[in-house]
Length: 69
Image 1: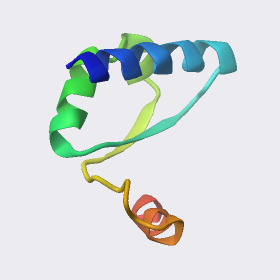
Image 2 (image 1 turned 180 degrees about the horizontal axis):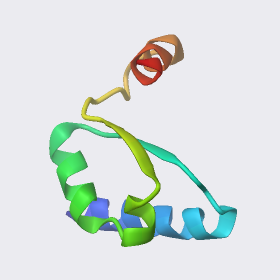
Image 3 (image 1 turned 90 degrees about the horizontal axis):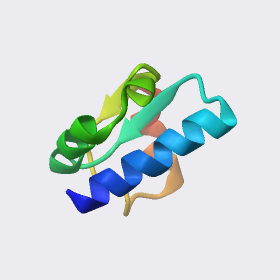
Image 4 (image 1 turned 60 degrees about the vertical axis):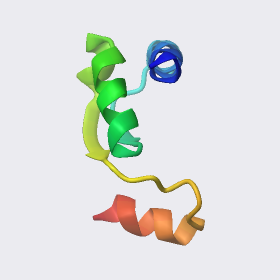
């Protein structure tokens, strides 16, 4: 859960500093659940899609396939 809190905090800062309007969140199912709990409301409101898969070891073209669906 520490990892999810750290990611959520960093993402909140990036959303505010860069005025991010939309986010796609990609994480393994367990991590995604932890992130959902840790996200602040301003981050949650910008999430337009979630992908509950671990894509870390895939080549870029495979990741693009998952995100274009």
